Image 1 (cartoon, rainbow, N blue to C red):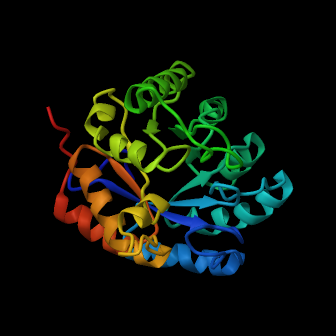
Image 2: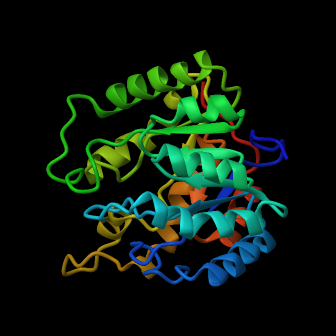
Image 3: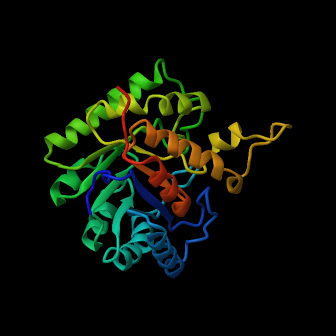
Length: 269
């Protein structure tokens, strides 16, 4: 399967959190066998890639020891890799290496630091921007110019990956990772500029808290996680129309349908 967007539409990456504390599903797929079943469901829904993660990166999440993260993700990757392209969502070198050995062919790297692993093993790499760590990234995040700073950072990291010999490098502005609502909206508005760097763009807005804020009730209460599908689809569709070649989502079937309706990504000139 091609690593780039298909001729017909952008790629859809399905999120598979093998964690007890994910913001989006509350640990529903923490059990390995249930995670494998969900992975196969996403394959049936049309996912191009299934992204397996064993450590939550939500604000305030606690770090997970390497051995525990390996225990969570490796069996799931081994089970799914013969049936679909699998990526591993990790910031740890040892986990990335074990995941690749288990069949993953893409390292989805929140830390944007694992290009040596991807280069050494001949797999793809996603460089994401994150300001701070889960412990502090939403503690009054500040940018002088969020679009310029994130774009420059990603271009630099992606360039390091290319220089190391990686032939498939993606960039992700890290919506919700050390950003305010205004920062997130500015980055969504700049997807075409990110695409103009020449690197394929991955966007992940699915179910994130800023969508809850934007869809708040009349009393100001943010929409709950299960009330953010409309915002997730709207922002994914927007991103695809602006040139994103892949979107990372929880609601695979609905997003695949939206991607098919939107068609191939067409960056604005």
